[in-house]
Length: 245
Image (cartoon, rainbow, N blue to C red; front, side, top):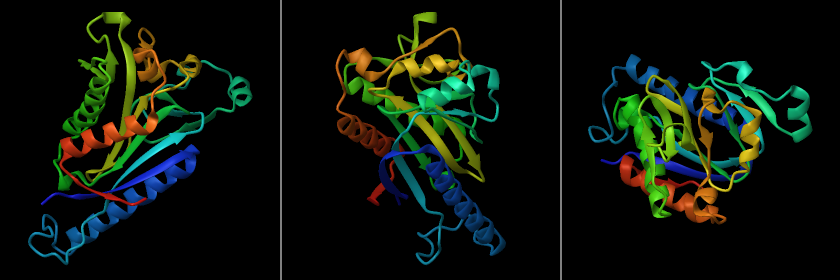
């Protein structure tokens, strides 16, 4: 039985309301799991009793206004621009509760937020991260761009085998509570890469960043790229997609 995932294409949105929406969905899912456990329903699913409620799974696709987010293990000194410079450029800044260090979100970037109950899929956070990376690697291949992983570094890279010449095309950072996830990935499509000069991206100062547009030498049809990512995620996770929008 394939878990259902409600897909929301949110378009261009500010960061904080979407962060709060994720928090609310995660809290509801966790509270339901706690209630199921207290009722002795932990481990039961709808294949045993269709009336049983399971946490809902969601997937958000969104493009954010300019924003920097600092993960709980990050370092504030990796924001190299002054508050005055950020204000001048209209860049918001939020310390948040995902893993990882500092990153940038903004126009031309596809941000994906899966809010999933991994107990409906698999309980392996490393596998979960690799699955998201794989969807982006396959999407890059659709554009004849070779993207790969680098051992010990989260994310997706171009020229991964070229040492310090490797360039990050997608960053990942998640939070997981009782196997319910939030946050996710940021995939540079037509992103203005100059904004990464405001930070030490993901705390990695000796490698650069790139975008699908830069690697292809042309502007990317963002709706088309989103469709590729969505198709690959669906194939990899094996979920049943419900289009909430």
